[in-house]
Image (cartoon, rainbow, N blue to C red):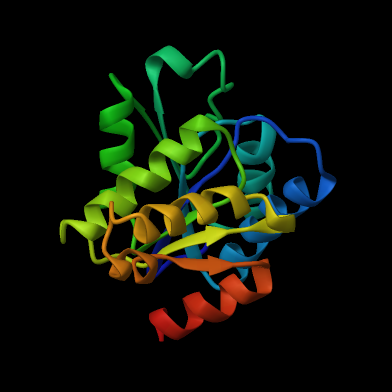
Length: 185
């Protein structure tokens, strides 16, 4: 197991989605984190993109920190062979532990859970609660409609234009790696 200097929290789906590119991006993200000796912090699932992400990291000698609420142990198939595996009582505890144990946050494609996690951190950033870099990994345009929604919030006066500067849209794992190298060096 490698030692790590920085940790990256990754939110993503417990399903694969309908494009193989989503799974490949999750696996590549895990490999990239391991290569750079950055610890993966994630939701401790062993299915869908979560499983691909963790396996990509573990299979390349990476350090993994997983947090799962007890009510999802069966549904998300808790991945107990992680470097660190924590079971919480609630989703709120899970998100808090993931947030406090990372230096940057990335959201890959996922469902409403991933959307909730992204928007919670975006809200914290807008309110000044978080200053951690927040990335939206927009593989094959998956998050395009969310980006349009945020633009609409700004354009129709429900958010300041500065909201658009509170997160970075990334279109590839290579671009994500470049951005993380810039902030971690």
